[in-house]
Image (cartoon, rainbow, N blue to C red; front, top):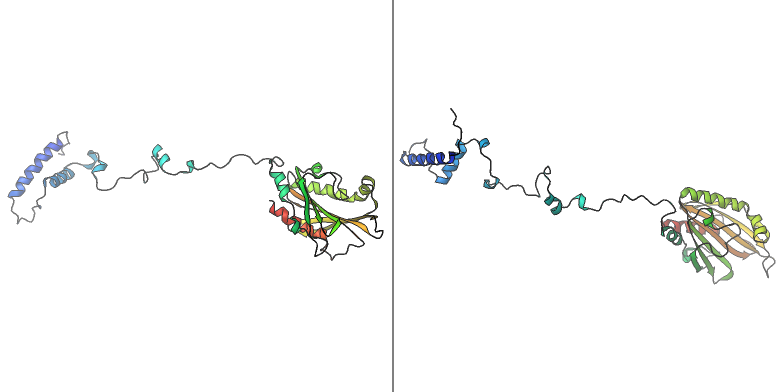
Length: 301
């Protein structure tokens, strides 16, 4: 019959251990079945392990030789407040922003700044010949006191732009030549496409507007043409009017064009005086300037 452990188990086992030690001292050392004498503490531990089932006595972790897990290696099934404060966790990192992207046209000062950054540097603006050098004469928000060119009937803000910036260029090589760049940011790409359609409508009405609206004479407006740029197709055309004071054989040449990049647009006007306007195909000043404008639009993104 198996003896049930009682509260005095430690005392009984201690007596039994003492008896066994005494008998071991009298035993024949030549007996191969005898055990090697041990210290009292070792024999006591052996007796406990042999006499008491492991399931009946709670195990004290501090009595074992194996290291107990620390909080750094503890089980994830038992998190504690101390682990949260001592160890890095994703909860301590900044949470991803859940704020909605501002609707187009409500981005604060970012759109006026983008319009400003879309300017072509004076050194990068093509001129009327290889020796031409431009200087920036003025630059600021808005379309200016007078609209540039012959075809614009209103500021770009009137056809959907939420920000507009104007930059004027002049040259020391001539006092009649000039260039103007209007840069605008619209609420979205669809609005920019709609604005482009309006500009084409104004181009078709340009001759009438130049005569009746601006009071110009001998107005001729060429048809729109396309030129490739790094942001898509640019559109341009050439108009003339006269006379030129002091030179009856000359005319005013006004090249206009625009190019859009997503929700951002550039409108260019280049004015010169001469008796002819001869450039190789694809190498007119307005075409090269639209390509430069495309580069500036890319940098403003």
